Image (cartoon, rainbow, N blue to C red; front, top):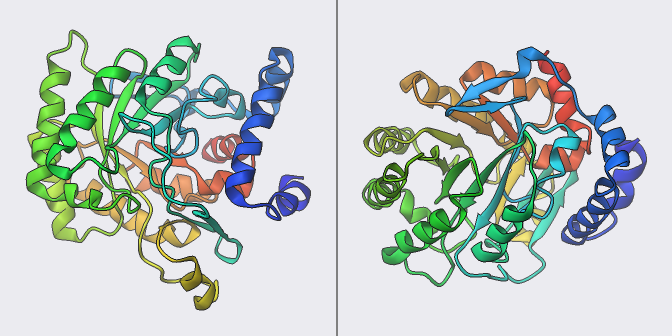
Length: 341
């Protein structure tokens, strides 16, 4: 029903407005516990073979909601009713920021893709921390994707990541360092070996000084060369990271079925969805072959249960979805779980 009736109607509306309307609707219907439990019977799928133990955490299934969807942790306690085993909030920055000027989110229906240049719009770490403090997330694993404010120079970026890490430490199960968004000027420069090693070692020193350190992961771009990926693997070993998230959105625009003039008119931004499937699979296989002991979370271009299965077969331990959720609807996580079983 979603793809035949609801999605065509939603796609008549500006995508960012639909995003906010969807949150209002989900908060309303899932806020009524009896109705939420009923919805959960339709959209969730449980099976012992889906359970995962990773980073010292127990995941009821390997399908997560990727960062960028619930940036401000507004529905953290609700995603389990839609079949997700974990959710990643953020990207969170120390101070609130509005992000890039609108219009900044675009659909490419012919490609089952999105282009976004949101720019880390979020309410700031204090707001997110307070919201997480009040929520009862149950058995849902919650990660925090952290970044820097746009006006923070790269030489002071570590300070921003440390602030977010400290403020959220008590309320989340794992952390992801985001240095790979294409929508914050200069951010991807932090993926270079030198500054990245310094940043991650600083965070890991703080983390390991805690009585119970949290899993610390890194999210990278799909646009890295093989040699850059080799550097990333080396940095992960040096900083004793718990895992990698592969991948963020891409700045590439090939191959696309959407006419070139429309894509050019949209302009800059990160591309996600169907066109990213092959590259994300390729990167996952490459890293898994060269560092089989490093846990991986596969994200990017997972549009069908088969895509999730192939990503897991390539070496990922868990998967995340975003654009596939937009195109396939609220039952997508449950369908992936059924397909995996």
